[in-house]
Length: 375
Image 1 (cartoon, one colour):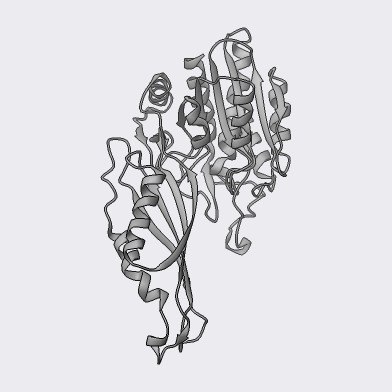
Image 2: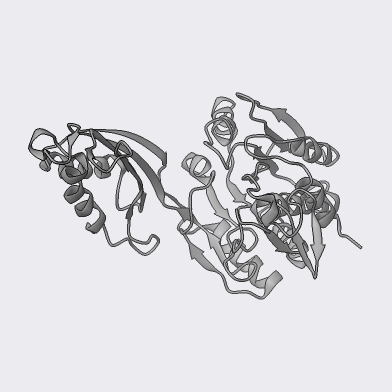
């Protein structure tokens, strides 16, 4: 027999909520939260669905945060099961979003249902911050929710984000922060010409490669007790007219920094410009900051989460700032203690995305335990 959390996870996975579409997931969640006494505030923006759900009006405030959108399924022929038809085989639930992060959403909702039923008069506030714009450009989702919190002076003390944080086993890793992410699109101008007459042209590939190599080999910092060292990666280079006998007239390159709190985006930009200026080339860079690093180095939420994991799962947990970006980068700057706790992330965004069925109920019990400790 399916548990309530498993049933809800399957119901959400069946919705084809490819970013930024919600496909009715928030309607399902909202109706369940209303029955627990939550007020639902809809905050749509530019075809993105967002909700802020609030229960209680005084005392400390505990929030769950997450997203209903998923990445595209990709080649359907590569899947063993249809990605939006949740399928259970050998104790594993398959479907797009199973791990990232519809099982977490289901576990959160059912945990709160159990908590409010068991403690109907318990003080404190519980909040849900939910969006359908996390897997994409993330400009109209949690950003909008945070703006509303500021507008209405709604204070949150602690937040658990349901991102898939675990590495090998549920609870073995939680995120207490994330690195910053800075993107750059470099355009280098040259002079197009015939390869037989290089003195009549200026090859942007030749001109910029020493500088790019210097940036790639540079040690930016050594990290610290919480963060690994800052990294620089070139993700794409494009140049040429498609013929072997033409010196190209321009080059574009995409690159990214994942940076620790030893850096700032401004320091990184200045360092890149210094290297490129030294190369004496004609260039421009379009910069885009995806998010600054954030960190909850300690505090009550971290301590109680670690204790809850030990109690529920018998697991020692690692505090990590690894992985990509998350919507925690928008929430944590409000001064909120924030951790990310969720399923194993081994196959997120992959074909045949899955989660162990048993882990869904274990995660639900873990969320309940954390909530019970905090309020």
